[in-house]
Image: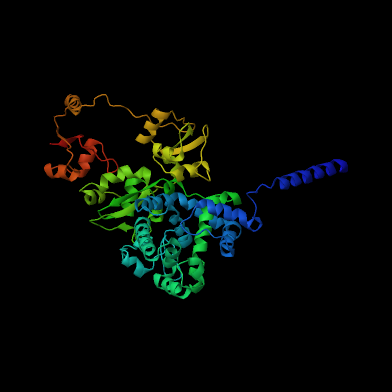
Length: 473
């Protein structure tokens, strides 16, 4: 028995020696044991908008992410799926470097309601005076520093101004953190526009700021070398969309209409202090799960929005046992020749970070024959069209079939309805310009309640133009 044990021990030692001799990088290797040249090589491959220097400060930040506070790092990586698509959209619109998105990792760890000791707030950590200078409202109803859309647009505008002033992104980032006045003073003292030459003249935090940015960039792109796994939020925080709301709407009303819990609306929209979106002629942003946009848009674009909303309320137990996954179908797609992750994100009406999250992909690389898991809202038109065109297999849930109406001509529909005409009612066909309130004005003897009952529609499913309504005589 002892002889067998010795042989096993000898074989294990041999395997360890062979593995070491191959000089492969173990993903579990702590940052302390990675060679500086290896990390510098990876940083150079990122092609950042700042000089990718690797120094003791960068190494210290990386050690925090990969060794000391791995749980925080995993949470940051998970929140990328919620916010990076938004950042990239606005960066692309302004033709700015896409790696500026990593700045929000440094500023707030991608927590939209983050607040610093100096009272800076939001994903981009605006102080109140700077926020107001860049058109962010702060009042009793809203704090737009916490609005992901508006704060991102203002942050990019501010960064663009700073880049114009200083001529490079290293100094622009330093000015974003420490203020343009301190950077100008450091430039005068150091007689240079090279951040790395003048940083010793900057305040301590600003002195390390670009290093923190470099470390955040490394984390997002190379976390898998350190055995880190993103901790993703639930599906209602992953597959989201931003829409503009012009009428006053409460989170209670939105929740009742869409079936999205109030706590999800709060998490996605922390800028609204009273759980209420105020009326606005230019529109306020609302971030909601994408599955809910169709039903909510009928209210947002309805001139009778506030009148209809006054009839909406939550009911007890509405979210008992709530699970966002119940609203999605899970399918499987086999990667074909010519596919890339960008094409597939358009095909499935999601974004690349969704596909990466669902398939635990650390990069954008996919290969022919690879099986990808895809989630889509139950019964969405896109789900049906994609299945018809590419033959996606559904291993777990069956997608609801869309019944094709053979009577495409509206006049044919009316002829059929004439056969079931009820003499107790008169009929009205909804026009494109009609709202429910318009109909009620034309027929003052009827009420919203009776109209809903007689025509089998609800506040959650309003009639469309072309629909024929029964009106009691």
